[in-house]
Amino acid sequence: PSHSYEYGCRGLKLDSLGLKLHLVTGAAGQIGSELTPYLDSHSDFEFVLGTDLKESFPALDRYEQLDVTDRTNVNSVLERHEIDIIFHLAALLSATGEHRPQSAYNVNLNGLYTVLEAARQTDVERVVVPSSIAFFGQHTPPIPSERAIYSPTTMYGVSKAFFELLGEYYNNRYDMDVRGLRLPGVISHKTKPEGGTTDYAVEVFYEAIESGSYTYFVREDTRLPFVYMPDVIDALIAIAQADSDSLNHPCSYNIEGCSFTARELTAAIRDHIPHFDADYDPDSRQKIADTWPETVDDSAAHHDWSWNPKYGLEELCSDMIMELERQQI
Ligand code: AKB
Image (cartoon, rainbow, N blue to C red; front, side, top):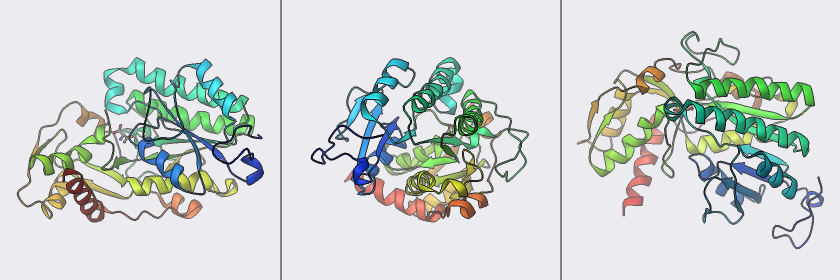
């Protein structure tokens, strides 16, 4: 599409400059609040429009309030801005989804469908959507690959399975370019996650620094895969930029930076904060964690689009603690 607005480039059309306009939904969420400013400040991606439910989001220059379930508004944003690439991040996470399955269905499934349909009708070039390890389930084998059996037990997991199937359907049926990867638990020090099963691995850092103690809501032997935010940003950009011919699993790539138990996380934090005191008091989220794989096979991502995470448990622990201590000063 040719762009008829300026976005700071003196009336020149973005297309004629070889530039793309990116739209991020869920821009104020855990991943969006880091991906959007990153895209905004990075010269290759300079043109970014953030959208979220919040009325305003001062961290971004170009921002619009948008409810992804509101078809009229989604269509209007896409028609007014002639978007090239969408990062569709707006979603409710697994634990919230179990408290409010109807809302999760509406945001995650109706929202996805609304965005894909609007993208189809306005010739958006590419749509990137995160899937999740919640796609898997109790019948999934240990260390699943992309084609492993899936049997999600949460509304969130069901919505991710639906995304992977629907994304492939749009690719085949409409020759669209929908892509995605299965994120494990995401750890970051900027925006706290809300309502996820893996939130304990973020909360623990805040509590270790603020109060010196934390009660996990999972058992100490609970092992899950995780990834640190800088690697998530790299992964989303790498998959968005990958040559479509190299993508053998366009909507379904596994990735992980490391896999650890809650007990191992406690030990890694104690290397930095020796007096840190941990307790374990599993709640309903344990049941969800127990259906997810302990680790995933991400060799296809390594092979197809050079996935190469930089942060393991030690590295992410050092960085989290350093950053959170700095924020306290
Ligand atoms: C959640 O816990 O719901 C998410 C996820 C693993 O997708 N962090």
